[in-house]
Amino acid sequence: MKINNSHPFQMNHYKLSYFLSLLFLFFVFCKSQGIEYVYENRNIVLNEMEKRFDIKEKLNIFFESGFKDENIRISVDSREKYNDNVITDNVIGLAKHYSIKQPKKDIEITLPDAVINLQVVNLKDYKYIYINKKEKKYSVLISNKPHFYY
Image (cartoon, rainbow, N blue to C red; front, side, top):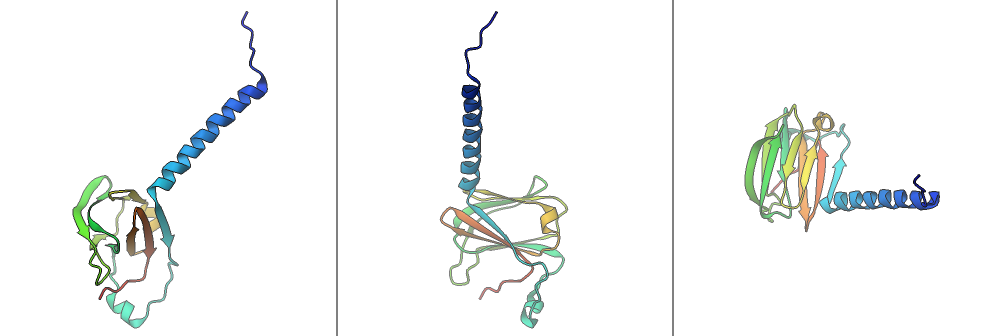
């Protein structure tokens, strides 16, 4: 006959500690990616100039500020579609532009410090993705409004 010397409080304490440790690791991992996603209003009204430069029927990915000869890969449905090093032209604020037909599968953008995963269901009403880098943090703006680069 085995005698259980563990007190119920002690067993619950171990379970709670284990759970909190896993939760902490989850938040540390997610935060280490350093990606902020912003979805603009889908129903933006474009002015006349924006209407002339609007790119229809394609999804456009713009790598804007902060890129310093960094390798970027874009995969759609696990198939690599783009692989190149990009450098931001600080005069116009643009590093690279990549355009694809509206995808039917999810998109994965592999950057030196992070991976951006974009689900098609969240992109179906948008045409522009703008990615900016500041140190090791990325901001991803999903929009229907074209940006201008001079």
